[in-house]
Image 1 (cartoon, protein in one colour):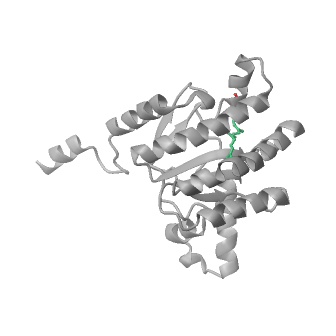
Image 2 (tube, protein in one colour):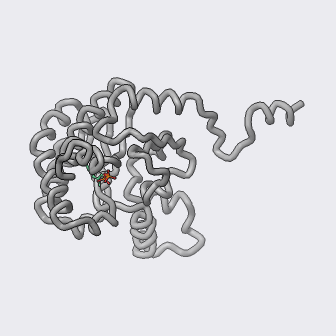
Image 3 (cartoon, protein in one colour):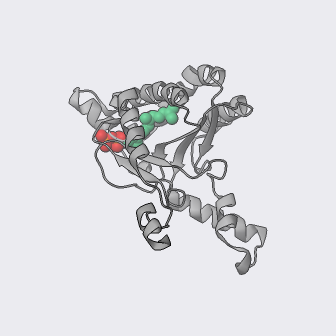
Length: 228
Ligand code: FPP
């Protein structure tokens, strides 16, 4: 969800207002995703590296999450959204841990869209914590395979992403879903996150629909030539 800071700057507002507009944009987009039949939506809200930001921005983001949970949880729960948080909870404030536990607990039985919020998350952190789990379980080296790692990862509750969207114009993945996005289709857009609405989502879905997914196989045109 990149571009909140620039969105605010364009309006001569402090960065926090960009994040606030970003949170509202997320809630609007969840509804649109449900209407489009999206079953899993995973958003990057705070990376393992975001602690490097100025202290007031970090505490502003933590506060915004608390306020957003209080403001939107009942509505999301009523809309049958299941909320899952992934990331290192050990180093986030206790109040936030409680808010996450509350959000997860109240929506656990929901069967609609699964909203995964990656908070204090990093793709590399996830690989490392999965390896640690396997070591703790006492797996022998030959028992460590892709399936064992995948089931130990924080994202084990969700299938690998089909579509990976980055807003804000940067062409990198910044440590998000490193393992899971091996075969994801990527859409990079200059649109700043608070401006990312139904039209931008539909454009990304249309781009995805035009892609040919091969998962390492040959292109169908080549395959028919090989068969002949
Ligand atoms: C990146 O934009 C955005 C973030 C680091 C924060 C994203 C968080 C939210 C949208 C709030 C989420 C709230 C809930 C309830 C999950 P940036 O600040 O790097 O923007 P810039 O590149 O324009 O400076």
